[in-house]
Image (cartoon, rainbow, N blue to C red; front, side, top):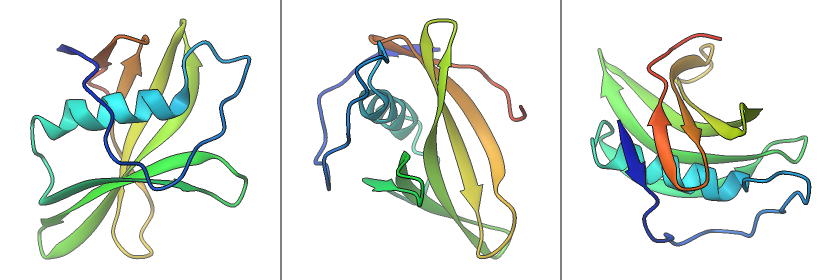
Length: 119
């Protein structure tokens, strides 16, 4: 399944652009967010860019209740893979371990669902 990149959404803060990367990680995260938003898998979807303690960009994208637990979902940059940027959708409930939900590739124009849930 593939989709063209839709228009930009509101962003909470600017992300640094790495000169050596041919595909911007913020653009890739936005494209994947819009791709999964069409399927509406989450109860509440919104895009919020954040940085981890090491300064790596990620995005909080929504929540979903499942079997009495509320899971928070994030999109994380997994770097370049075969000339495309790989973005990982993860979920976590409270202090539980992070679970991998899906992997996506972005080539600068379209998103491709890799349909995998493990490294």
